[in-house]
Amino acid sequence: MELDLLRSLAVPAETRMLLLVMDGLGGAPRAPGGPTELEAARTPNLDALAARSVCGMLEIVGPGITPGSGPGHLALFGYDPLEHRIGRGVLEALGIGMELTPLDVAARGNFCTVDAAGRIADRRAGRIATELCQELTARLDGISVPGAACIVRPVREHRFVAVFRGAGMHDALSETDPQHVGAEPLGVRALDPAAVEAARAVNAFVAEAGRRLADQPAANMVLLRGFARHPSLPTFKELYGLNPGAIAVYPMYLGLARLAGMAPLPTGPSVAEEFTALEGHWAAHDFHFLHVKKTDSTGEDGNFDAKVAAIEEVDAQIPRALALKPDVLAVTGDHSTPSALQSHSWHPVPFLLFAANCRPDAVQHFSERACAEGQYARLAGKDLLPLILANAGRLTKFGA
Image (cartoon, rainbow, N blue to C red; front, side, top):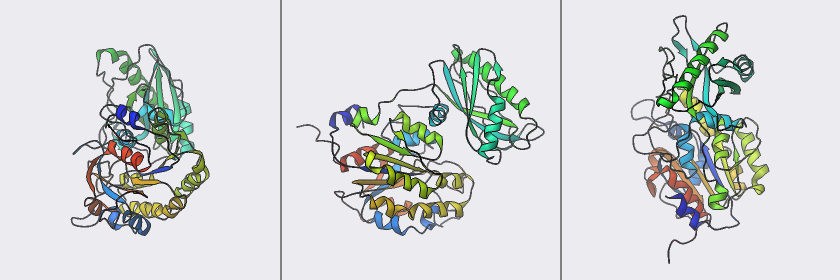
């Protein structure tokens, strides 16, 4: 749906909305014919909510397309991810509060482990402690490369942000992460003639980073991806007159929220603490985005049972959300992360939308197979937000 159309239909109302995103929610059976992680989980609260809701499956980007976290969340926020392409580096940088200038190209970094032959043994360096990440980024900050200043900041665990600041910097760059173990990190290539100088600078940075990390048993090399400049998006306030807030533990998701004009709200690291933050800030915002990461990270780790437990952990908090009496509560994911694949996948994602004036369908359980029989058996990811707004009385009639 066109943003200009939604902007023209937006009207004020005294209603409050909650978008609960269980990152990587969708799954797949670990054995043929078996349940997915969501189907295996005990979710009495989500099941009861689904029975009172309208349900369906989201094609986040399109059939067969595996979404990254950036496109996945942009779609859930109502932006067309094919039109608004935003590199992950910018999202990470904004998520930790970095101020980017027009001379900056930002990249998302992973500390990784390479063996004696230079081949990747662990793309995430064993998910090192954030304290070690802080120590190692200090080693890399300010590396001297031709044509750019290098700014390196820690994010969380093995993740960091690298910003290359210089007049000749360009973001048309290939990534250094081959996306699988056993391969050597890739050299950065210029994908546009204008990016040749930037590619030279980034390759020089990676080479020096490897030298400075050589004494580390695990985090002895870096991988860079998601090179990007700061984009501009119309915000929720500009489009819909909303005052939105965002609750997330991982900085990248706060970066996405900031692009949409959402205020980042402080929270503790646990799911229960995120819901405590929701309760504490409920009256101050009319739209809340609450992000849960563990459903994704456990899937990427290939841990079926841990993902089941993460889903059950969220289910236990649902009564706290309902006690706030939201006018609309939507629950979904930004993509699927089946533990059997240990990665994002193309599988559609289940969703439910509860509102006083919705027309519940026949779905009685919150699961992939059940939601596929719901009213919205296939809905584009970007079209969920208009449904949320409509059910909250935030969109007026189109035409005479």
